[in-house]
Image (tube, rainbow, N blue to C red; front, side):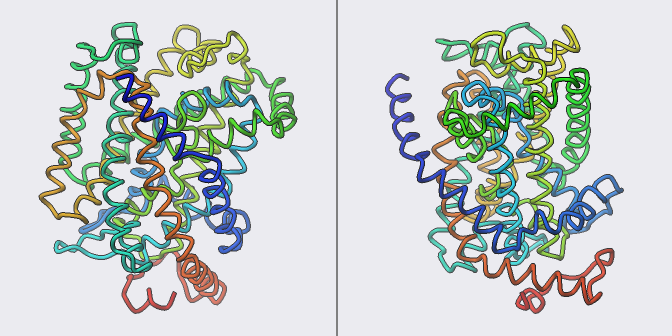
Length: 482
């Protein structure tokens, strides 16, 4: 185990070097420029087409899922334990100024999510059953004309899926259950390589999650469509109660964030914490940016929807980043900073810091609430993300590979639930960078098509040739017009 840890640490240091981080950040800046800073100048439009219809009743789809269901699954896949535990870790390492850099990198991350979702719709295909399938592997193969790179992305996605949507979330879910039932977070106990209670928890999780996952995308979105809005609203409202109970500290905290933003320590903590997708840098950045902008998971889910407009799919990408980071991560950060929970001791335990922050208002129920939210967040990611790697498995080897992946995914859960959490986190970053780099390179090379789609869309709106409330059909002919 010691040799394994040293090997992963070595590879991790090479993967997540400053050049990689700068590339991810500058990609978002460039894509923002290419789409005319759509996330800012067209904010009224994308808000009306996402928040404005999110709570409306979904129409049943015969061979596809609705855009709202796809958004729920995408949110379920990215809103995970990093939103609660990871934010506390970044604040501990980088200070309050980390929040500012999280805002900056997430703002540009909106353009990345927008661009990859747009390309996902442009290059998606239909399978033999008439269902839409798509994602980075399709726009890499058919847009960039690099089939070998598309296959590499698909392989990395399968590996990352077994880690992110399985190992990390199953482990966190088991730990939350252990804390609620047994009063101990046994799965992360130091020196405990295998834990029987964690394994039993994993068996229960595997049975419940397996029932959902083996039902395919239709069953997955039926569950996430119910869980995600409820858990997000509860967490946001609970956080706002705490923040406004300390209303006199909001302005000082905000000013403190700005004053520390250019402190080298803060910049380092935020860059590692807000630019990297899910799982990065144990202790410094484990999963602060959980919105997955640039990872390639969003376009896989949205390509399966009935959405016929590439740009509207892009708007849901902006929505995903906004809810995940600007709402949920910010709620966690301001709760911790306004309550002063991070100043009590020098603990790097994100869960303990968040427990203490919520406990300052809700008392003993605060810890219970945090663990319930962790359990819901982890479970939604566990099932929401599972479709992405199985879609990549299907791209590589067809339906037999999908069945094999699902079986492996479920069988790995009991083992994941019994491993120390630090081993799980280190395992993830290896695949994270492997997915992000080829996806971002492809999006950058295809950014001209994204720009063309945006220009075409805005011209049709201004000329009133596009009725956003009327369903249109995506055809090969109108996609070529982009």
